[in-house]
Length: 313
Image (tube, rainbow, N blue to C red; front, side):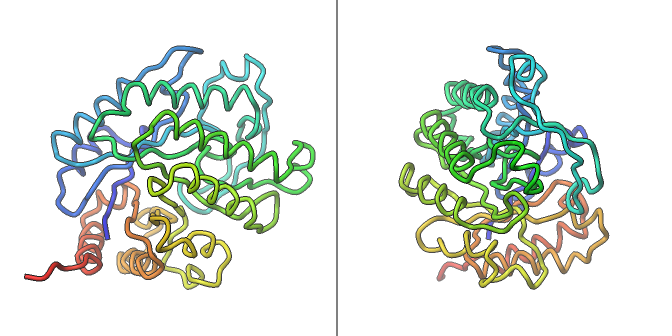
Protein backbone atom coordinates (compact mmCIF):
# COMPACT_ATOMS: atom_id res chain seq x y z
CA UNK A 1 0.00 0.00 0.00
CA UNK A 2 1.32 3.42 -0.90
CA UNK A 3 1.42 6.26 1.63
CA UNK A 4 0.93 9.82 0.40
CA UNK A 5 1.58 12.79 2.68
CA UNK A 6 -1.19 15.39 2.59
CA UNK A 7 0.39 18.82 2.83
CA UNK A 8 -1.82 21.91 3.08
CA UNK A 9 -0.82 25.45 2.20
CA UNK A 10 -1.58 26.34 5.83
CA UNK A 11 0.93 23.83 7.19
CA UNK A 12 4.01 25.16 9.00
CA UNK A 13 6.94 26.21 6.85
CA UNK A 14 9.26 23.33 6.08
CA UNK A 15 6.59 20.62 6.33
CA UNK A 16 7.01 19.46 2.74
CA UNK A 17 10.79 19.47 2.97
CA UNK A 18 10.71 17.34 6.12
CA UNK A 19 8.44 14.70 4.60
CA UNK A 20 9.20 14.45 0.92
CA UNK A 21 12.42 12.45 1.18
CA UNK A 22 11.25 9.89 3.73
CA UNK A 23 11.38 6.39 2.20
CA UNK A 24 7.96 5.45 3.62
CA UNK A 25 6.27 8.33 1.80
CA UNK A 26 5.47 7.49 -1.81
CA UNK A 27 4.02 10.80 -2.92
CA UNK A 28 2.72 14.22 -1.93
CA UNK A 29 -0.89 15.40 -1.98
CA UNK A 30 -0.91 19.19 -2.04
CA UNK A 31 -4.00 21.14 -0.99
CA UNK A 32 -4.33 24.79 -1.86
CA UNK A 33 -7.37 27.04 -2.15
CA UNK A 34 -8.85 28.92 -5.06
CA UNK A 35 -8.27 32.06 -2.98
CA UNK A 36 -4.51 31.41 -3.26
CA UNK A 37 -4.30 30.64 -6.97
CA UNK A 38 -6.93 33.07 -8.31
CA UNK A 39 -6.63 36.23 -6.18
CA UNK A 40 -8.30 38.32 -8.88
CA UNK A 41 -10.49 37.50 -11.85
CA UNK A 42 -8.36 36.32 -14.74
CA UNK A 43 -5.17 36.44 -12.67
CA UNK A 44 -3.45 33.30 -11.41
CA UNK A 45 -0.58 32.74 -9.03
CA UNK A 46 1.08 29.36 -9.44
CA UNK A 47 4.30 30.21 -7.61
CA UNK A 48 3.64 28.04 -4.56
CA UNK A 49 2.64 25.03 -6.65
CA UNK A 50 5.75 25.55 -8.79
CA UNK A 51 7.84 25.28 -5.61
CA UNK A 52 5.98 22.17 -4.42
CA UNK A 53 6.57 20.45 -7.74
CA UNK A 54 10.22 21.46 -7.80
CA UNK A 55 10.77 20.13 -4.27
CA UNK A 56 9.03 16.85 -5.05
CA UNK A 57 10.86 16.52 -8.35
CA UNK A 58 14.22 16.91 -6.63
CA UNK A 59 13.25 14.11 -4.22
CA UNK A 60 11.92 11.88 -6.99
CA UNK A 61 8.38 11.89 -5.61
CA UNK A 62 5.11 12.35 -7.54
CA UNK A 63 2.47 14.96 -6.67
CA UNK A 64 -1.32 15.01 -6.58
CA UNK A 65 -2.81 18.51 -6.75
CA UNK A 66 -6.07 19.66 -5.17
CA UNK A 67 -7.42 23.18 -5.68
CA UNK A 68 -10.10 23.48 -3.00
CA UNK A 69 -13.20 25.59 -3.50
CA UNK A 70 -16.14 25.93 -1.14
CA UNK A 71 -15.04 28.01 1.84
CA UNK A 72 -11.65 28.67 0.27
CA UNK A 73 -12.56 31.10 -2.52
CA UNK A 74 -11.69 34.76 -3.15
CA UNK A 75 -14.15 37.56 -2.47
CA UNK A 76 -14.24 38.67 -6.09
CA UNK A 77 -16.41 35.67 -6.94
CA UNK A 78 -19.14 37.00 -4.64
CA UNK A 79 -18.65 40.54 -5.91
CA UNK A 80 -19.25 39.21 -9.39
CA UNK A 81 -22.61 37.82 -8.25
CA UNK A 82 -22.15 34.29 -6.93
CA UNK A 83 -24.82 33.38 -4.39
CA UNK A 84 -23.56 33.01 -0.83
CA UNK A 85 -24.65 30.33 1.60
CA UNK A 86 -23.86 30.89 5.28
CA UNK A 87 -24.03 28.21 7.94
CA UNK A 88 -22.53 27.05 11.21
CA UNK A 89 -19.89 24.51 10.23
CA UNK A 90 -19.36 21.86 12.89
CA UNK A 91 -17.01 18.91 12.60
CA UNK A 92 -15.47 16.43 14.99
CA UNK A 93 -12.77 15.46 12.51
CA UNK A 94 -9.89 17.42 10.99
CA UNK A 95 -9.75 20.97 12.40
CA UNK A 96 -12.51 20.02 14.84
CA UNK A 97 -14.87 22.66 16.17
CA UNK A 98 -17.65 25.02 15.15
CA UNK A 99 -17.20 28.10 13.03
CA UNK A 100 -19.25 30.45 10.92
CA UNK A 101 -18.80 29.39 7.33
CA UNK A 102 -19.54 30.95 3.96
CA UNK A 103 -19.42 29.26 0.57
CA UNK A 104 -21.13 29.66 -2.80
CA UNK A 105 -24.11 27.52 -3.67
CA UNK A 106 -22.47 24.40 -5.15
CA UNK A 107 -24.03 24.79 -8.60
CA UNK A 108 -23.65 28.56 -8.88
CA UNK A 109 -22.51 29.25 -12.46
CA UNK A 110 -20.20 32.12 -11.51
CA UNK A 111 -18.47 30.00 -8.89
CA UNK A 112 -18.17 26.95 -11.13
CA UNK A 113 -16.93 29.18 -13.93
CA UNK A 114 -14.11 30.37 -11.68
CA UNK A 115 -13.23 26.80 -10.69
CA UNK A 116 -13.19 25.74 -14.33
CA UNK A 117 -11.01 28.69 -15.31
CA UNK A 118 -8.50 27.74 -12.61
CA UNK A 119 -8.49 24.13 -13.78
CA UNK A 120 -7.91 25.26 -17.36
CA UNK A 121 -5.06 27.57 -16.38
CA UNK A 122 -3.48 24.88 -14.20
CA UNK A 123 -3.74 22.45 -17.08
CA UNK A 124 -2.01 24.85 -19.44
CA UNK A 125 0.85 25.09 -16.97
CA UNK A 126 1.13 21.56 -15.62
CA UNK A 127 -0.58 19.09 -17.96
CA UNK A 128 2.79 18.00 -19.34
CA UNK A 129 4.71 18.09 -16.06
CA UNK A 130 5.73 14.50 -15.26
CA UNK A 131 5.99 15.20 -11.51
CA UNK A 132 2.27 15.98 -11.37
CA UNK A 133 0.61 12.60 -11.81
CA UNK A 134 -2.89 13.22 -10.48
CA UNK A 135 -5.41 16.03 -9.95
CA UNK A 136 -8.42 16.14 -7.63
CA UNK A 137 -11.78 16.98 -9.19
CA UNK A 138 -13.19 19.82 -7.08
CA UNK A 139 -16.07 22.26 -7.17
CA UNK A 140 -19.66 21.60 -6.07
CA UNK A 141 -19.23 21.09 -2.31
CA UNK A 142 -19.74 23.56 0.51
CA UNK A 143 -17.05 22.77 3.05
CA UNK A 144 -14.02 22.34 0.82
CA UNK A 145 -15.21 21.82 -2.74
CA UNK A 146 -13.74 18.34 -2.56
CA UNK A 147 -16.13 15.69 -1.23
CA UNK A 148 -19.39 14.91 -2.97
CA UNK A 149 -21.55 15.69 0.05
CA UNK A 150 -24.02 18.42 0.95
CA UNK A 151 -23.94 18.60 4.74
CA UNK A 152 -26.93 20.84 5.38
CA UNK A 153 -30.46 20.31 6.65
CA UNK A 154 -33.34 19.42 4.33
CA UNK A 155 -34.81 22.86 5.03
CA UNK A 156 -31.59 24.61 4.06
CA UNK A 157 -31.30 22.47 0.94
CA UNK A 158 -34.85 23.35 -0.11
CA UNK A 159 -34.22 27.06 0.40
CA UNK A 160 -31.07 26.76 -1.68
CA UNK A 161 -32.97 25.13 -4.53
CA UNK A 162 -31.32 21.74 -4.24
CA UNK A 163 -32.36 18.93 -6.54
CA UNK A 164 -30.41 15.71 -7.15
CA UNK A 165 -30.19 16.59 -10.83
CA UNK A 166 -28.75 20.02 -10.07
CA UNK A 167 -25.99 18.64 -7.85
CA UNK A 168 -25.14 15.75 -10.18
CA UNK A 169 -25.01 18.05 -13.21
CA UNK A 170 -22.64 20.42 -11.40
CA UNK A 171 -20.27 17.57 -10.54
CA UNK A 172 -20.38 16.21 -14.08
CA UNK A 173 -19.48 19.62 -15.44
CA UNK A 174 -16.37 19.67 -13.23
CA UNK A 175 -15.45 16.15 -14.35
CA UNK A 176 -15.54 17.47 -17.90
CA UNK A 177 -13.52 20.56 -17.00
CA UNK A 178 -10.71 18.59 -15.37
CA UNK A 179 -10.77 15.91 -18.07
CA UNK A 180 -10.26 18.60 -20.71
CA UNK A 181 -7.63 20.51 -18.71
CA UNK A 182 -5.56 17.41 -17.89
CA UNK A 183 -6.10 14.98 -20.78
CA UNK A 184 -3.45 12.46 -19.67
CA UNK A 185 -3.32 12.78 -15.86
CA UNK A 186 -5.12 10.62 -13.35
CA UNK A 187 -8.21 12.31 -11.92
CA UNK A 188 -9.50 11.69 -8.40
CA UNK A 189 -13.18 11.86 -7.43
CA UNK A 190 -14.07 11.99 -3.72
CA UNK A 191 -17.32 10.12 -3.11
CA UNK A 192 -19.82 10.70 -0.30
CA UNK A 193 -23.45 9.84 0.37
CA UNK A 194 -24.54 12.45 2.94
CA UNK A 195 -26.76 14.83 1.02
CA UNK A 196 -29.26 17.32 2.42
CA UNK A 197 -29.77 15.53 5.71
CA UNK A 198 -30.07 11.99 4.38
CA UNK A 199 -27.93 9.12 3.20
CA UNK A 200 -28.40 8.56 -0.51
CA UNK A 201 -26.08 6.85 -2.93
CA UNK A 202 -27.71 7.65 -6.27
CA UNK A 203 -25.87 10.92 -6.90
CA UNK A 204 -22.43 9.51 -6.08
CA UNK A 205 -22.99 6.46 -8.26
CA UNK A 206 -24.32 8.54 -11.15
CA UNK A 207 -21.33 10.89 -11.12
CA UNK A 208 -18.88 8.04 -10.49
CA UNK A 209 -20.14 6.11 -13.49
CA UNK A 210 -20.20 9.23 -15.65
CA UNK A 211 -16.59 10.00 -14.73
CA UNK A 212 -15.47 6.45 -15.53
CA UNK A 213 -17.19 6.60 -18.90
CA UNK A 214 -15.54 9.97 -19.53
CA UNK A 215 -11.93 9.19 -18.56
CA UNK A 216 -11.74 5.40 -18.18
CA UNK A 217 -8.79 4.01 -16.28
CA UNK A 218 -7.50 7.50 -15.50
CA UNK A 219 -10.17 7.72 -12.80
CA UNK A 220 -9.25 7.20 -9.14
CA UNK A 221 -12.02 6.91 -6.53
CA UNK A 222 -11.30 8.50 -3.16
CA UNK A 223 -13.02 8.26 0.21
CA UNK A 224 -11.88 10.74 2.85
CA UNK A 225 -13.25 8.72 5.76
CA UNK A 226 -11.01 5.69 6.02
CA UNK A 227 -10.93 4.75 9.69
CA UNK A 228 -10.03 2.05 12.19
CA UNK A 229 -13.67 1.98 13.35
CA UNK A 230 -15.59 -1.18 12.52
CA UNK A 231 -18.22 0.68 10.47
CA UNK A 232 -15.64 1.08 7.68
CA UNK A 233 -16.54 -2.18 5.99
CA UNK A 234 -18.60 -3.67 3.18
CA UNK A 235 -22.31 -3.38 3.83
CA UNK A 236 -22.07 0.24 4.90
CA UNK A 237 -23.58 2.20 2.03
CA UNK A 238 -21.04 5.02 2.41
CA UNK A 239 -18.27 2.46 1.93
CA UNK A 240 -20.00 0.43 -0.76
CA UNK A 241 -20.25 3.31 -3.26
CA UNK A 242 -16.45 3.18 -3.27
CA UNK A 243 -15.53 -0.45 -2.56
CA UNK A 244 -18.01 -1.94 -5.04
CA UNK A 245 -15.93 -0.46 -7.87
CA UNK A 246 -12.84 -2.45 -6.86
CA UNK A 247 -11.45 -4.32 -9.84
CA UNK A 248 -12.88 -1.77 -12.26
CA UNK A 249 -11.68 1.56 -10.89
CA UNK A 250 -8.59 2.24 -8.78
CA UNK A 251 -9.40 3.01 -5.15
CA UNK A 252 -7.75 5.61 -2.92
CA UNK A 253 -8.41 6.43 0.72
CA UNK A 254 -7.71 9.22 3.16
CA UNK A 255 -7.51 8.90 6.93
CA UNK A 256 -10.63 10.43 8.45
CA UNK A 257 -8.79 12.47 11.06
CA UNK A 258 -5.46 13.65 12.40
CA UNK A 259 -4.93 10.84 14.88
CA UNK A 260 -1.98 12.44 16.67
CA UNK A 261 -4.06 15.54 17.46
CA UNK A 262 -6.66 13.35 19.20
CA UNK A 263 -3.95 11.21 20.83
CA UNK A 264 -5.35 8.10 19.16
CA UNK A 265 -3.10 5.06 19.34
CA UNK A 266 -0.70 4.80 16.39
CA UNK A 267 -1.82 1.18 16.11
CA UNK A 268 -5.24 2.47 15.05
CA UNK A 269 -3.71 4.21 12.04
CA UNK A 270 -2.28 0.87 10.98
CA UNK A 271 -5.71 -0.72 11.50
CA UNK A 272 -7.31 1.89 9.24
CA UNK A 273 -4.73 1.15 6.57
CA UNK A 274 -5.41 -2.58 6.79
CA UNK A 275 -9.18 -2.07 6.56
CA UNK A 276 -8.81 0.15 3.52
CA UNK A 277 -6.46 -2.34 1.87
CA UNK A 278 -8.88 -5.22 2.52
CA UNK A 279 -11.60 -3.27 0.68
CA UNK A 280 -9.37 -2.58 -2.32
CA UNK A 281 -7.69 0.69 -1.34
CA UNK A 282 -4.15 0.84 -2.65
CA UNK A 283 -3.15 4.29 -1.42
CA UNK A 284 -3.64 6.02 1.93
CA UNK A 285 -3.43 9.78 2.27
CA UNK A 286 -2.44 10.99 5.74
CA UNK A 287 -2.28 14.54 7.04
CA UNK A 288 1.21 15.88 7.54
CA UNK A 289 0.77 16.35 11.31
CA UNK A 290 0.59 12.58 11.80
CA UNK A 291 3.58 11.93 9.57
CA UNK A 292 5.70 14.56 11.33
CA UNK A 293 5.26 12.58 14.55
CA UNK A 294 7.86 9.82 14.59
CA UNK A 295 5.70 7.44 16.61
CA UNK A 296 2.87 7.61 14.09
CA UNK A 297 5.21 7.66 11.11
CA UNK A 298 6.89 4.47 12.33
CA UNK A 299 3.50 2.74 12.65
CA UNK A 300 2.53 3.91 9.16
CA UNK A 301 5.84 2.74 7.71
CA UNK A 302 5.43 -0.71 9.27
CA UNK A 303 1.86 -1.05 7.96
CA UNK A 304 2.97 0.12 4.52
CA UNK A 305 5.64 -2.57 4.47
CA UNK A 306 3.14 -5.19 5.63
CA UNK A 307 0.63 -4.21 2.93
CA UNK A 308 3.09 -3.96 0.05
CA UNK A 309 3.09 -7.12 -2.08
CA UNK A 310 6.51 -8.71 -2.19
CA UNK A 311 8.00 -9.65 -5.54
CA UNK A 312 9.35 -13.16 -6.00
CA UNK A 313 13.14 -13.42 -5.68
